[in-house]
Length: 201
Image 1 (tube, rainbow, N blue to C red):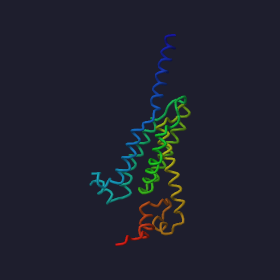
Image 2: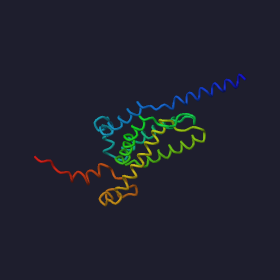
Image 3: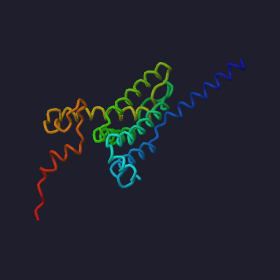
Image 4: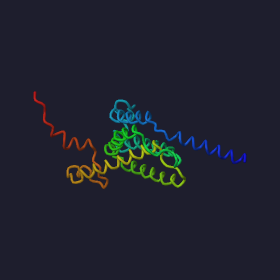
């Protein structure tokens, strides 16, 4: 009887721990999303001449050095965002409000940085983790769902972006490879910047 009580008590502690982990970290994701936008647009000013030197020698390598560690950290965080099936599996309103800017950032990161392959591998790894954990009786909590939905939204946006520019011959010449994902800045410079009406003096 004493052994059964200890097991029940231990199981109760594990359940309480899982339930506590299911809380959505709104402050973390809010700061993280804001930081991503600010640092990505201002990294040439805020992040240490070594990055600019690396980007000068090999732009593709620079993008990988910038983004692959980010995706690795996000995946490692995601592996800890699981709770028991009985725990809450929905996102709060604050998470839904942050979903659009978060998804847009990853879309921008993938298209402008030309890092679709690391992105899609991370997404597949996340999906495989969900399937594996589901067999063990665990499901993504609010934080895991937020990260998974952010990547899903980004994938949808990338697909729509490519579909809209699929028949653009100018961009096709600029991106002749199999992986056709035009950069937003290239679309702006090739199609929008020259069409802007100059202001009158």
